[in-house]
Length: 208
Image (cartoon, rainbow, N blue to C red; front, side, top):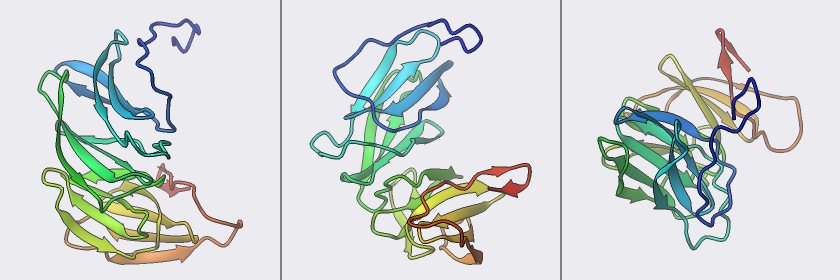
């Protein structure tokens, strides 16, 4: 949609699946800008200029909780996607022209439900339904570490550091390194009741 006029610029052809909760990401491959998102049963790539679907790849086809809340993460032609309710994650390798995709590996360690993921210098970081914080090698899928950390929660990244917000209200700061999860600081968010499910947001050197 044209944001200034409200006009519809394109609409994709349907392929028989409902949407999910996933927020799309935008990446460039093969000289084309693509929107990548997850629907009910597929990872989907859409050409941002034309609205044409470049490819689809199945995810959690047989699962009954297909909410898919976690946005994909991308680096150098590799996309990692995951589902907390399903079988876990998978890495998809995108062809140089951006129009084809191939699954390279799967994992069961990083079943992220809704806390988000970050990718830093070839490694994926996030919290799993196992209540562990996990680091994966993006190329191989090797689990670099699993740690209790601040418990299951959300993650943001800035200046080489992971800002980890546990659903129990503990906010932790850890270096983004595959060598291990070590908190260099923590504080407790005391306001509110119930689980802390918001995502840390960093802007103008402030953490919200």
